[in-house]
Image 1 (cartoon, one colour):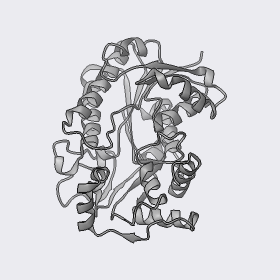
Image 2 (cartoon, helix red, strand yellow):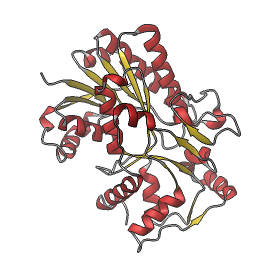
Image 3 (tube, rainbow, N blue to C red):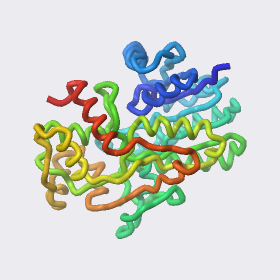
Image 4 (spheres, rainbow, N blue to C red):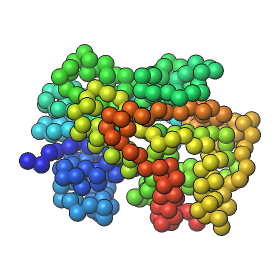
Length: 341
């Protein structure tokens, strides 16, 4: 019997890559998305990367609709819960992001437990480890034993806070109400790699801004990077490996500053106007008041937060694609999609 996976967020950057890998491994995938209007387009898009497109079924579903999940989880072998609200600009009311993320996850877990699902894999974020730190303790190398303090709003933006609160709520629910079901959480860093369509991942915007000449210089910011194909691979390993049950896994392939990313891009595209200088910290703060898209990354200005992903490598045999390939493949895809002039 072909095993069935319910995957939320099939239309997203990570969701589409995970779907392709699951199909190529012989799974049947039921992918949820917010609007059925994209089904035909996504079928063609994903079909370019797998001969098993007939094993993909689409279902329109909203995280806020708690009643739909009991039907959707029935008869499934696994759940890959990837969907989560990701605003480009933080909303005035943080509950607009936090509540759908938390309540949607709990609705899925409750339905899964009722239908005796073997294992749920929840995509969290490395921010659940790396952020929410007291002032002066932000720098360092951190592993999965560390938890962000969700009440420390000075070191968490709305999206990061939603990921921390949601992951903590998921583990609390498992302990209290579903001890027989297995949960695994995967915590990726900034996801790069090849975009499949013009609705690319949020982290890819960094590469786009460097290539299109709109950045005169780069901020003093760095982060742990990971290729989207490696995250998809880690999600499947977390789903399949018995040793993953009840564990958290950071998914990152190494820390790079934006200056180092610019060096990699200049080497590959010497004819392009890629920034060489670094913006002063004070000027970046000033700029963020006018360019709201900068605000989510301001927490990392001048900080060096590194993730230790050795656990996934040792326990699951995970071997992520290197950062240079993640950056170049992302750039190549953005250029091929005519997103950069």
